[in-house]
Image (cartoon, rainbow, N blue to C red):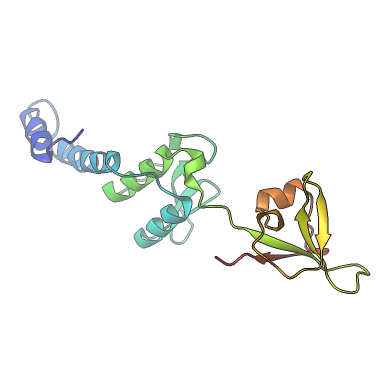
Length: 179
């Protein structure tokens, strides 16, 4: 639903007798951001971090911090949708507020980019040459001495690498699959 900002401004101005007009103007700025947010798609974590960086902020360990990582301005859950703690006593710009709420409203599954794929090679052992791992027809791990390929059974996500317990970099080498 689109609402003309002039209509919101008019409504706020009409209520000026009952509230502080300057606070109402600040509310208008936040309302602009919220209305713009409703018209946009979800936000990936990588996009969120890039936009924060443009504004002079970082995001790690669920915290939005200033560039020097000295002040936390907001906490955003990475396991729940619409879960934000802004009780840090910091006023933020409407643009930052909009960015935080947009990311927080993004479903968890929609926040991450497509999973990166890897070929996994055994690098330790008495093999003569170093075999590559793949998942066979019954989803067990097998080895192949063929060169890296684009066979989906030979490609692994980080989640699969952990699940199959082939994440020890002393024994296994990950080679990113090129697009």
